[in-house]
Image (spheres, rainbow, N blue to C red):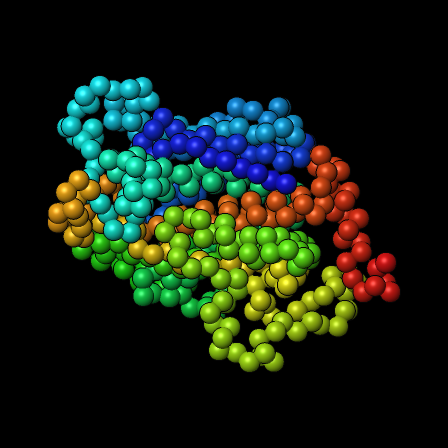
Length: 393
């Protein structure tokens, strides 16, 4: 069972990550995690924070000589911007804090953020007490945790990718073949170069207007074995677990496995993924299509797992919306804090991390093992049984 926790505020000293349940003897390095963190920081429409932070996860426990120990893996990510917020975000009690600059109480509520429900729920009189933890800065910690899971899945041939399929009203052509290397080079992580150009124009137009723009991302996990998850309990269904993980990402408002809402336009005879007669004993249960997105009955089906999620436009606007003051309830302009214009490109990397965590958890649930060699034996033994029963059992 893979468990993970994060701690930290956007402008605090840094982020803390603990990942538990990773078997021993998994090769891992700070460099590998650093590659994933750098991918998250790129993308057209990113804000000024990315010019300050060069994220790096320092491993402080659970790894020795380049391999996991089977004990909890602890990591920290420094917030370089902390140098500018030491008084405003001080841990120790500050008597009569200054109300100038960053120290000023935030009372102008932003529609669409955690500001209002957070301050009401926890009884705060300063919106900053909520907005700091609710910030998308926390997703750097998720990517660090997800990197460990990605590395585990790679040991067993599972690869994860992501690409933007829409930004604002601009949609990529679904008929375009996906070159994953080209996606990594695209400023908006789009496989359709023509659409990518229009997406960047849409981001530019939103920035010019002091506005923001959302979009849709697709995450693809390849070489996922058949049978991860289970149909026997609601909380073990793999598609439900993936949906919850993706829905927990900041600003995500919709999740689908495969085409999702598009499925309602099909008849049953058109939608199901027909199973092909077995011609290759080493690769049974081939499908003509993958409209179900790689799951059936709450379990992986052996085809690529495909998950899509939609991100609303970011709530923090340079041209603020009308709102109200936390103290008086009177009309004000909403608070503005440095922000991105579009989070769709980095959201793909965050989505990969979240799907990786879910798949790694389900993988270890299925195959177990306290070390990679033990898990590999269990995995390989299982894969020898996956086929027609008169042949494989």
